[in-house]
Every structure is written in structure tokens, then in C-alpha cells.
Length: 333
Ligand code: TXA
Ligand code: MG
Figure 1 (cartoon, rainbow, N blue to C red):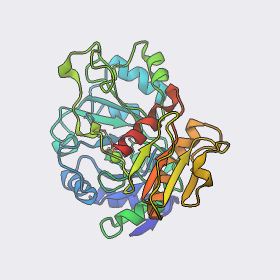
Figure 2: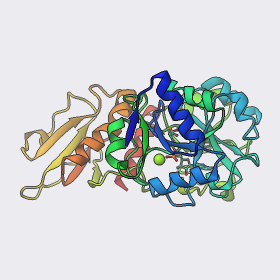
Figure 3: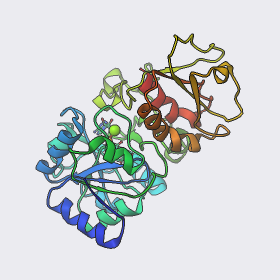
Figure 4: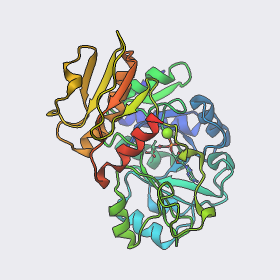
């Protein structure tokens, strides 16, 4: 794999590769993305092949500005409000697509996920090519998203030809996704770096949560059955068990090596006295941003070390932990 830097010269070379229909792993403020020209169906097809992603799981597109978003989707007043508040940044909006977006990008859906990233390298490329980039996370389908260039090179070597090293990603978790395709029923499809409460306060209305609100304000047929909402996703190869409050540590078999994840460095429990248990701290004092930033890096590191099981301490309560809870639940299911 040829790994470029974020120098102006390399950004220009990578922009040319993308215009030529190549696929490049590019850093964003959330995770690394596997990018191709969204208006070039042949290039987009390569993304599905490199990831081993099922053809029915749609991609999101990345644009340089809100003005350019109007070329590809039908914006409504709620979209304008959220774009004004949170773009550029880790917020993806699902909106009715315009005809220029090829069907392969949306897996045949009439809607498309769109976001304007704020990472300087991704942003510079979007400015140069002046075309939208389709980009899912740059990991093999169903594995953990990459937050460091090493994750990309390690898991996509031999399948992907080009990548940019932009250092560690700032947020470390994928963008928050809001479905605004029915404006009177905005839905939270994926919790992420931007909190539900902050979005609700800008919208001035409550978000429908398809996972929780079975009896919500929208009819059943409104519940999004996008394959991306499948439960098993973002999983390490090592099995994960989420411990409940007051649940005692599992009985270990002889020679069983276990990794255990804590949310504070102060915590002392029975596991720490057992020599076959290795402790890892996601955040030193229950800081959800720090935990998000470390989560995938830690899971990748633990996965590479050949433990038989990962246990996770009870996740702290509170809405600011929603994205971490979502990813750990998926990883454990
Ligand atoms: O932070 C991010 O969003 C990263 C960076 C690279 O931008 N991208 C990312 O893409 O996480 P991906 O493909 O790994 O996750 C996007 C999710 C998928 O679960 C997909 O099923 C869902 O969004 N999705 C895409 N288009 C959709 C649509 N029209 N309706 C509902 N869900 C959609
Ligand atoms: Mg992904």
C-alpha cells in the first residue's frame, strides 16, 4: 500500500487518483474513510469489493460545504438548521437524494446519507476535486472502524492500493446519523460524537429513536430497516462480555487469558488480583470523549494480543455515553 502524507503536494496527487476512479483511505475527524468519487459507479463498486460489504448496505457521501450539498440532496428547513449548527463536523443527515447520485451509492434507496467533514486533509481534497466522495469506514465489513493509519494498513493490505496518514482521528467514533427524510419525524439512526440533546435543542423537537421507541410518534412502517442498523457490527474477533452492575467477574478456566476494560483508573476489583487477567483503562476518570477517542484503538490492540475473552465494566449512566453504549452493545451481540 502506498501511504501518502497530508502535504499539499500529496493532497494534490491523491485528488488526482480519486478523479481517476481510484479508492483511497482518507482520515476524517471521526474514523478513517474508504473514499471514491461518488459520481463514478465503477469507482464506488471497488469500495464494496475492498470492504467485502454487502451490496444492500448503502454508503454515505462527503461534501465540501452546505452549498454543494444542495447539488446532491433535497434539503428541508430542519436540515438547514442542523447544517448551520454542526457542519463541518461529525453529523450525517439522511435526505431524499437527487438523480445525479448513482443507485450503487444508496443500494437502491431514494435517500442518501450526507455529511461535510471538518478534517483538514479530507476537506482539502473535497475542495480540490469539487465532487462528492462516497466513504464508509475503512475496515473490512463488520470489523472495528480504523482510528489510526496502522489499523488501515494492517487490515486492508493487499486489497487497497492508497491511503493517507493523518495521525489519530479526533473523535474516534463514527458520525451521529439523523434521518430527516420525513421532516415531521426526525430519527436518530446512530448515536455518535454529537449528542441527541444538542440536536434536539437545535431542532426544537424530540428525535424518534427507532431502537427504543417502538411505540413512538411515527408509524411502524417508518422504522428504518437499513442494513447498517444491524446489531452485529463493529466487532473485534475476541468475544466481548458486558458486565452488569454488581455482577461478579466470570469464573475463569485454567490458562484462560482475559482482558478487562475499566472506565476509571481508580477502580479496584477481584479481576486485578488474578494474574491471568490484564486490565485496560478506557478513560482515567469517566470522561466519555476520552473513552470514545480510545475505544477502537484499545479493542484493536487487545484483539491483536490473543486473549480468549474481553470483559467490560458496567458502562457509566447518562446520555453522553449513548454512542459508546451503542458500539459496545453491537460488539458484544
Ligand atoms: O463518521 C462516519 O460516518 C464515517 C466517516 C468515514 O465519514 N463513515 C461511516 O460510514 O461510518 P459507514 O458506511 O461505515 O456507516 C454509515 C452507516 C451505515 O450503517 C449505513 O447502513 C447507514 O449509515 N446508511 C447509509 N445510507 C443510509 C440511508 N440512506 N438510510 C439509512 N441508513 C443509511
Ligand atoms: Mg462502518
